[in-house]
Length: 145
Image 1: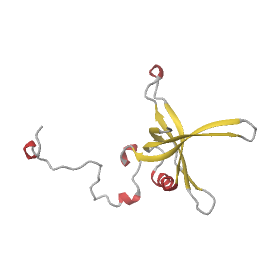
Image 2: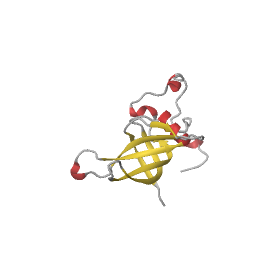
Image 3: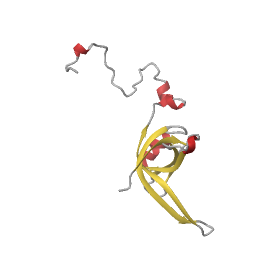
Image 4: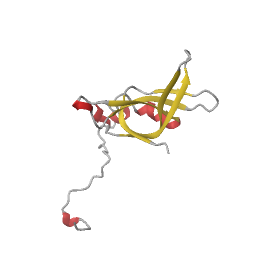
């Protein structure tokens, strides 16, 4: 089984290209910085940096909605990209092929601005992902604790 789950922030804006041929496929490349859980000797935060690729509609989603600093949760697989460069040296590289990507924080948490379409709907209440329940007492609940 080849499965990886990472949470981190984009280190740069994604780059989107399309494959050649009749059925062009979107290919988005980006990198994320993932903080390490443990630090050596109490120094500052340490991070690992991973090159990632997303294909098709997911690649288009990445290019449209993600930018440098966006915190994401990514699941996918690890792929080796081993090749020989122009100088005849073997190069070993690893990249993450994204299969699922989710936002790991609200839009405003990273200090960025919201897209223009959501700014025009400023009077509409923001759905923060939590169900809004009316204020009531415990007696109104259909079950007891």
